[in-house]
Length: 359
View: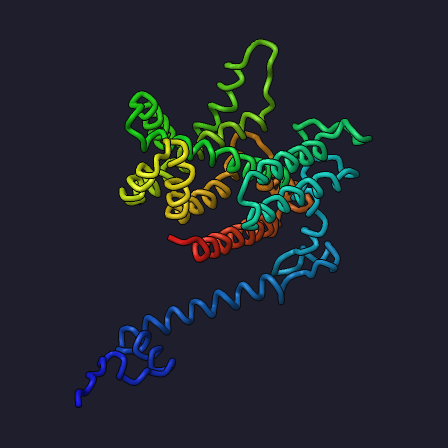
């Protein structure tokens, strides 16, 4: 009768959590000292943060005059200035319009994440969302007062530049990746390589300045572009180059047998790319694509350098008031929490999409 040999790794008794912690953090004198020092630092930072945020802070419903003597945060500042941080110099009595416009874009992003929307219906969704956003923000129709783009500030500007910039940049990036990946049209391939390498070789601030000052000079006489539109165009063509490289990595990882199988079925280039190659390439490049999305979303805050008043600029407006100059940390904390929450949602969706998409 044959006997089965047990794997020593599987047959070894599992160590308890306390034993694992002891081996990892307190295995010798040096590790013990380092662990205790780091624990002391962490405890001290948590205590200091809790005191500033909660115990020594003035609560949101407290009087603003108490902030002068408080050792912690002044939350009445945010209660007083949150509308300025979110909507900037947009007419105060019409703040419901940028609020509704922002919620429209956020809802469109959420709907776009649904699997059943991953088809041509996305075009109609974003066309409708863009029209509603523009109508609410600009007005001039349906009894809404006209508000010029120069007064669009804060959260709606951030969402408009980030979301529409990515929506238009991604398909351009896919086209550039396909142009660089093919060999049958060397001129188009050379153009794609030249464009991608040039854009990836310069900082985004330079591209923004070119879009803001050079692009209007290239327009025909009598045609003018407002700074928001030129900034979005610059962001689109900048991020398209990074999307192109992410997608190209996916295209190169598709096995050669997939190309041969598509050719054996008599598919032309367009059919082969759309039905066989591109879906696999996008699936394989999903981590890189989502990383580009997160980076592009956060980099949108750099538009403040060229005078576009996104939520970073309106936060600075809020504590520029002489009565509130001490509370810039509270304003930037609110902005940081917004970026943290939205980036966490995007990262969670990315992980869910990777688990759901077959490799």
